[in-house]
Image: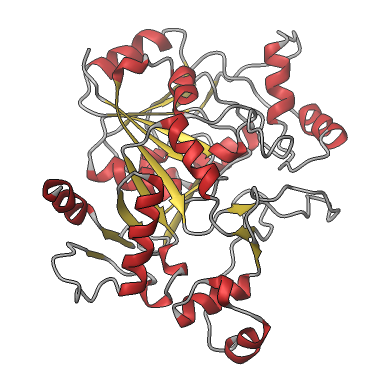
Length: 388
């Protein structure tokens, strides 16, 4: 059986920049078929030449006009959100067939209200868990997706998807949310999402046999995030910490990037001295538009997520948070000389440390939101592999 399936998964708690990585892979590798199993509680952003696209159910790989698109049975659709998503990306979607599994359920207002009443931990309250619960219970009140313009459910889904997959060179399975949000996360439950997040689950939701998997790329970030403690109505909940990791203020991240030092070393005196000169970065979630909370990296959790998913490569985003001079940089790092101006000693030492801790090569460094904001480290990784 040909191993033509590639998986891209978020290795932390979401918002690691999967949308950028998926879109880049789909275009650079000219992916033939892409499948997603998403819910409206997560958004994936792709940006190219200052144009942002937000995808919630439709595969991000839609940015490649040649890629055949499928929405798998692990998906849940909110029709209002899907219609908005389609219309905002109409320039690349209009008239383009997207095939949906016929058992993808539709969120209704009652699902959202049930979650607001019952969920007291971190949640975007989009109705996903309540809707999935009804599917599991075979509730007769549940409705399933039929069609919207060129997006349609197909009773011959199985045959069409497997024929497309079996006649393709590259099939991409797009991950949603992050491993640390997994329903069965011992450290983070109940501040988690409504399903397991893993490559094995991605393949299962897509009805792809594991023997087809060729490679897994795990997307991570320098400083992981959690959602805000403030919810839709302005009230406060507890969305959970990040293991035992230290929570930072955004001023610490920004001044650390400005000075080229790790944010742990940024104290109140440095904040007062450099705040007006440092970048004013912060992040809002793509779904709730609330400010994210940001933490130090949790190596224990990351190692466990790597063990669970066995990635062959890591794509490290938000690398500019280590040094603002790298913001929006595009280049290739060969590492042939210690004087290579692209990465200084601080960045090289950080990468050497992280690779040694995780035992997985870091092949790409994201330096900003756009498709072309990255440092390609693959030549260096290849040279080190041949050397050893």
